[in-house]
Length: 357
Image (cartoon, rainbow, N blue to C red; front, side, top):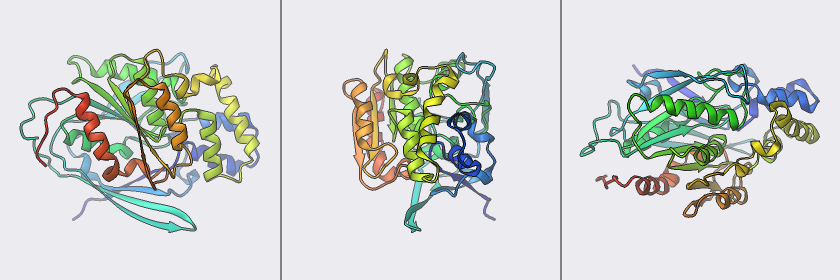
């Protein structure tokens, strides 16, 4: 008998919040701003619009990989709102991950379903004495660590120690609010300190993130010298324009001036300057070494925007642009992205050695 299948929805950043606005009518910008900052996992499923992308996998893909939890302290940005972060550790093994895609069009919109499988159980990697390093994986807004499973197993199949994290207010993590950067970096710093004891994580540490997670990866690497580099898939450079583009793509019925007012109100609610929420303005004091990935059909984080982030990264950083996928589809294009990411990881780990296919 086949085990039940798990379907992970893959909506875009802020979809749930914008859908709530639609249900509420023409609400003031401040009201919508508070909704946008509310923890995504606190919204009921019926609010979310139909997903344009589905990730389909059998529940046994996480067999033998228990979920852990860590209580992060409250951040000064969100006082009184500590988050208990859920995470999994995927050790190196010969997982042989495979992602198969089905694409179609519904009412003029591109739709996709990605089916993910891996070898269960996974044997050890021949000749691997110790992990080549650690990859921390950060999902997009409104998602959870489940959406990063293909990348976690691909990195672990290459010999890397992989860590899947539910960001605050997402998945099984707690936290009543999100901050689009500052509080999340503080959470991740605390989690890294926890994971580094009693035995340090394998070095180097690379952070791989998607959309909001990609922007967060760049910001985190810039601010934490313990991190080696970032791999950012479809990151956005500035928060407010990204919110407006999501409105244009997914909720055109919401008046643009309300969404614009909401984006302008978010920094004040958090007690921050607007630039504090823009990844491109927070690539110091240590510009990150980064591999950035973009798609020419991404209307949320188009290549010209990702180029702005590349300009703020360290010398030697790269931008790889692919043709065709949308913002939601790009993270699951393993066939086109993995051949670029694999040599990047190999270049970051001096101990990496070629492995026969």
